[in-house]
Amino acid sequence: MSDLELLERDIRAAIDGASDEAAIETVRVAALGKKGSVSDLLKGLGAMTPDERKVMGPALNGLRDRVSEALLARRATLKEAGLAARLASEAVDVTLPLRASPLEQGRIHPISQVIDEITAIFGDLGFAVAEGPDIETDDYNFTALNFPVGHPAREMHDTFFFNPDEQGERLLLRTHTSPVQMRTMQTQKPPIRIIAPGRTYRNDSDQTHTPMFHQVEGLVIDTSSHIGHLKWLLEEFCRAFFEVEKVEMRMRPSFFPFTEPSMEVDIRCKRVGNEVRFGEGDDWLEILGCGMVHPNVIRFAGLDPDVYQGFAFGMGIDRIAMLKYGMPDLRAFFDADQRWLNHYGFRPLDLPALVGGLSS
Ligand code: 2NL
Image (cartoon, rainbow, N blue to C red):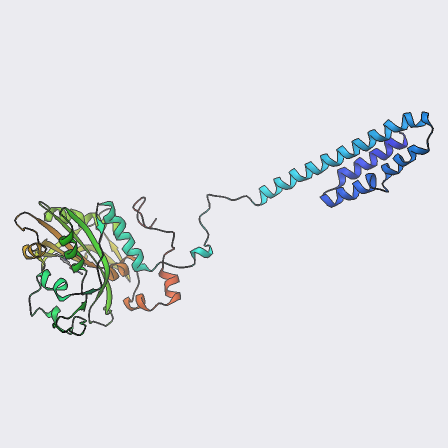
C-alpha cells in the first residue's frame, strides 16, 4: 500500500470513529486544516518537478475531495442518527390519559359539577337553563307563587328580609328558585321547558342546613303536558344522574302552594354504611318534590289556565351531590378548605356529558 493509501485509510478510520460533531471537526482540522496532513502534502506540490506534479497533483486533489466528501457523509449520518434517537426517546404516546398539568391544578366544586351534570341531562332533553336575581321581591318569591299571606315561609324566622323601603316594600333573598320560573313564564311564550339552578337562602343553620344552599327547579308549560310526562321525565333524570340501568320511583301525595296536585318522589335504594346504592334494596330515599302547576300560578304569569298547563319540580342540589359523591357533612361544602376540594373536587376538563355515562 502506498503512503497516500495508508494516509487515506487512517483518515477514513478516524472519520468513521468520530461519534459527534466535535470529533468530526477534529478529524477535519487534522487532515484539511491549515496544518493538516493532506494540506501539508498539497503545499509540497510547489516544490515538485512538473512530471512529479502531474502525478501527485490529481492524486492529492482526489484525496482531498474524497476526505471532504467522507466528512460530509459522516456529518449527515450522525445528524440522522441523532434525530432518530430523539424521535425514539421523545416519542409521545397520545393514547396515554392526561397528566395533571398546571392548568389542571384547580378543582371544580362538587356543587358546580352536579349543576353541570343536571344541565347536561336536561339539556339533552330539550330544556334551557334560566337564571334570575338572588335578591327578589316579596311578589315574585311568594305572592305570584300562590303562597298565602300568613304562610310560615313568609315569617322572619324562615326568610332573610332586607329593611323595607319608603313604600313599605321589603326585598328578600330568594328562598327557592321558583321566582326564576315565574319570570320566565311572564317573558317567554309557551311551550316552555326550563331548569333553574342556583343559590337559595333560608334562615336555617344546623348539621343538615346551611343559610345559603342550592336548588334546581324545572318547569314545563304547554297545552297538554301531564303527570305521565312528569313521571317519565323524572325517571329518565334519575337513571342518567345516578348512572343506573333502572330506578324504581314512588310518588307520595304532598303539598306545595304552587302545585296541585303535589307529590314527593322517592327512589328505591340500599344503604351500605355511608354509601347509598340506587336501584336495589328496601329503603326509599326522598329526592324531590313536584306537581302540576297551580292554575293560580298560571294566571299570575299572565297565561290562561284553561289553555295552558304543565308541571314543575324542585330538588336540593347539595343533598343529592352528597348522596351521589358520598360526602358525609354538608357544612364542608362551604368551608373553602383546599384539602377537601382537592379530595372531592373534579378536574376542570372532565366536563359531564351523556356520551358513555356522565362520569366516565
Ligand atoms: C322541593 C319541591 C318544588 C316547584 C318546586 C314550581 C315553580 C313554579 C310553579 C310551580 Cl313557578 N312549581 N316549583 C314545584 C313543586 C315542588 O320543589 O322539595 N324543592 C326542594
